[in-house]
Amino acid sequence: MTNPVFSSRAAMMLAMLGMAVGTGNIWRFPRIAASNGGGSFLVAWVVFLFLWSVPLILAEFAAGKATRSGPIGAFTKLGGKKTAWMGAWIAFISTAIMFYYTVVMGWTIRYLVGAVTGTVPTAPCEVGAAACVGPQEYWDSFIGSPWPILTHAIAIGLAVIVVLRGVKGIERAARFLIPSLLLLVLALTVRAVTLPGASAGLAFLFTPDWAQLGDPTIWLEALTQNAWDTGAGWGLITAYAVYMKKREDTTLNAFMLGFGNNSVSLLAGIMVLCTVFAILPNAADQIVGAGNEGLTFIWVPQLFGLMPGGSVFMVLFFLALVFAAWSSLIAMIEMPTRVLADAGIARRKAVLTIGGLGFILGLPSAIWIEVFRNQDWVWGVGLMMSGLFFSIMIMRHGVDRFRRRLVNSEGSDLVVGKWWNVVIRLVALQAVVITVWWLWRSVDLNDLAGSFTLFSEFNVGTVLIQWAIAIAAFLGLNRWLAANAAGSPASAEDA
Image 1 (tube, one colour):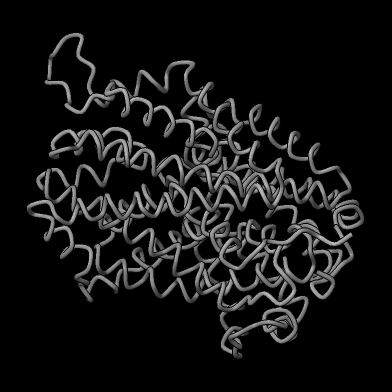
Image 2 (image 1 turned 180 degrees about the horizontal axis):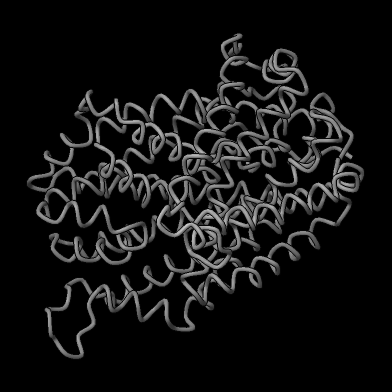
């Protein structure tokens, strides 16, 4: 049976952008850029767009289109049966992220409702003030209540409804969500750059200090940001590429997706940093150092509270966050659905199974913020290993063979040269370096025993223990995975 396909290139690219553009573009990129030199960070960030994101996006487009399978089936067909467990790791990592990403979308829904009703406080409490509810108190009260459970359920329900409708449902959602998201971000960016004093934010973001590029941390943070906000190596692109047409271009689409995603990140950086420098320049360091949750849910309301017409723009901001989270969550549910469908499970049953598991296994992150932070840390770093496994799969298949037959496939408008052969091998080295760096950062030399415990928000032990359990399970199931998750035997030529 022939797989359904996206109705047009435009529809496919909107769906792919919806997958790639998420809350990480809007709340993490501005913070990381500001914390790592602004313009200097941008230089390194653009370099890794070409050294990490685009090469992996090309690989995922090619693998999904050629095999018509999700990550496990794609690895089995292209890398051999012994690599099925690697595909399982990739599928699991993105699914594990989905379990708590629904919680994030739930937070954005709650704050959108609060912004619309005018109940989100915008002024901090004065020291010693009794019975005061400021942005910090409002946030603490919310995450300590049962409300995140309800918003988590609403979020996963909204995504499941879309995925149940198949590729056509994904298309329709993308046609609405992505143009709307782009318009909202553009409107907020225009407002930000027209604020008095916004030029200081622009100068900070776009003026590199070349001496800072000698700091390895800036390069490692730039690589991490590319890995986390483009969707490259997550397996999500592989799942969506199953629905590409036979003669669909892979190369041009990969570059368009990489540049499109990073353009949204750049707009978000302009939006946030111009607002910060224009309204609270003396608190800039405090704001960008607050962390993702603090920046978005504690500081952003304060910024909008001091801006003329800020209540309207706060609604637009949280609406943009909802759309960004929703479009990404759709892809996170579609990918494991594809894996179950490859294993012979009916699509509707697969969607409902993933949705049910997403709700149940996301409950700990909805109830306890400490669990949320732990899971974000463990599986966020795990994404680096996903990039490594894609590189290994391609090397097992034959790098030049993969490039000539699958990347430069029928319908490609641009031909990828041998530079890709070098870069895709370099991805493996980058993945190892960035993984070791993140793990080393989480070691406390003054408390080595405490660094290797399971129950910690942020240490090396909780990562290694949870990874070991997952990898042992997948290795043990490798033969079964290879035999049962290969999906349709059809190739791209049959679509």
